[in-house]
Image (cartoon, rainbow, N blue to C red):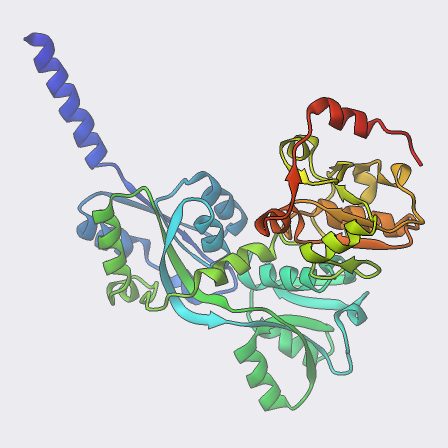
Amino acid sequence: MRRAVVWSLWTLWLAGGTAMADLKVMVAVDPSDRETMLISLLDMRSNLSKVTGQPVSAIKSQDLGDVMRSTRTGEYDVYIAPAHVAASALAHGYELVGSTDRDEVYQLVARLGTKAPADLKGGKIYLTQQDSVGAYVARGILNESGQSLKMFQQVFYRSTTGAGLFAIDTGLVDATVAKRGDVEGWMHKNGDKGTVLLSSHAVPGGMSVVVKKTLPEATRVKLEGWFGSSAGTMAGIGRVAYRSELSNYKYVAALGNWTPSQLPGATIVTAVEVVGLQQKGVPVIDVRLVKEYHEKHIRGAISIPYGEKSLKDVAFDPAMDEWAGPDKLDKNQPVIFHCNGPECWKSYKAAKVGLSKGFKTVYWFRGGFPEWDGNGLPVESSPPTAVAAQAAAPSR
């Protein structure tokens, strides 16, 4: 009897502790967005506590790099953050409530007379602070075009949005990345003083709100109701009145990770084109891990893993990596490189290294194994002994 009473009390205590657990909220502030600096954590905690019926703890941080790290480990129940932070959370167990502003398009603007991003090599560029969404998008769209921030002699990171356009006016810099609305206003006011070289896809504007999927449904409904009302405006967040397409968040997430959509010197091919080339005898080189190759690979593909230690950047340092491709392949014969899709850099790097080593004809299958497998094309598996024997094959 006594044990039963003790157990009941223990159970009630645990239940009470669970019910009273703090709802953890992270407010990630873009250093270049002055309006978000005015968000009141006190008002937010008070309001959300009344709405959800449980204690609320809220933290504000300008260290967006660290906040993005926390999204991968699920440290907070709610994130109120710029698009790139929200995009990371959505890929790690969170769902979208919405955003406070309409979608934005960011543009790379350069001094008049500049014809292509490559013309800016050795110049100067103005960006908002390194972890800001503007700087994040800038790196991404440059990467997509096959360029890198490393091409610039100087990168000025500042906290004032839009000031880069005026820096072009005065000749202090050669380029900047700004919102399309700001660019159009600047162009209208100052005449054609600059050239738009690149534009991003739609990027969710303002602050986005995401909540952990594992929260009780009733709590999620209450949170969504509060953020969608005028109460959020009172706390300085703004009303979460817009809901961008999830594909726009996926695009933002991909900007920081995906390979460029071009590779000078190489021919980018699709799965269907790889089939045709393979039928003509062009070898398909799988640069993924041996384990991945063993589990499933393109039928007839050869495994030559690319040991990647360098940065995922067009200006990567191949000396940091390990790859036996140049010693195992005939540089005078066409070759196809592939790995795990657009977000995998190994095949991009292998193709680029191959070109630098004198390979005559390089095909880059950017869509890689996911595209091949998704199209239902022939695949096979290999026992570890076969893969080991293949890897030990003599050089040509």
